[in-house]
Image (cartoon, rainbow, N blue to C red; front, side, top):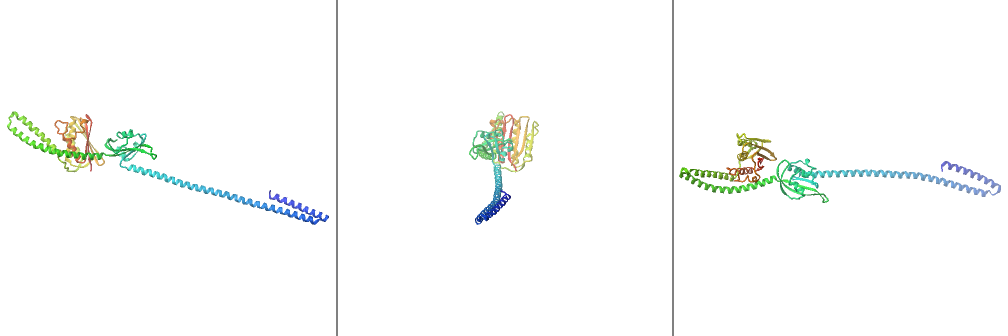
Length: 444
């Protein structure tokens, strides 16, 4: 009920009571009972005033209560809104913390991945990993350097399409080996020795996810081992040869003396036989001299040598005016080494003479000089008859020769000279297609 309606009702009631009071007083005056009516009327008026006051009080209380309720309601809504904003602010703060933690974890993962990659790339041994389908997943720099291929060229390609035996055989057969040694021909056609270890590649759950191959280049170690074994064998052979040559020469001196005496006593008809004996004695003496030269320790008189200049001089000296043999010398630049020029010239001269003899007429003699790290490689290739595979491993042995007049010390002495310089010599040949001698010497 509105305030104006309540006021109008109260006014009407007041006028009614006033009229009733006046009527009662008039009646009381005529009947003589005025005091009772007046008392009753006063009681009614007081009751009415009490009801009116109570109604006004309750209305005021209700109004105050309503205002307080609105204030309370507004306060509660404000509290909820404030709490909501506070929660949102805290959620945003937690979101930022979570983003920072995520970013930190990602940075840590990237850093750890980069650290592991740095470790892999810094390992001096070659490392290649493949998955179960033989697809190449990773390869470090050492592996690329050893095998002569770049990692970006092979990542994602099948292992068997890139590499040859024995690497492919080991991985195809899922064969695990430890420190096995195998010969291998690289992509840049180098003949090397590999020390290989293979193992299964597993994840954190222990499942096999591929294969891992770790290998090292044993070529230098093999060469040093070969040189050491060769020097030891040559030393033993030299001691034995020196003793044999000494005993033979003593006997040859006696035979030579008797042959000369016999030559003075025989008639003209027997002179030819004596001359033949003396000729054979000279041949035997030459063999003994070469045997002694081979047995003699190599005392090197090392001096700075330009290998390109020395090679060119030897090649021109050997070929000379033989226009049927074409010469070519390719060199990336001057190559300076510490060597005994006289002995090295003798070694190169023996190889080139054999090459010219093997061509038996027209042919070509190609020489190439190149640098490989701290070494110099000298390749001498001819277009002669080549060396049969059955005797390829014997050509450096003393007394072994395929020539009718040879003594078998030429290439044996060449090998001795090269090895004494800290180098190595190999031969690659197919019968009827010429031969290639590869000499490796340490550079300065």
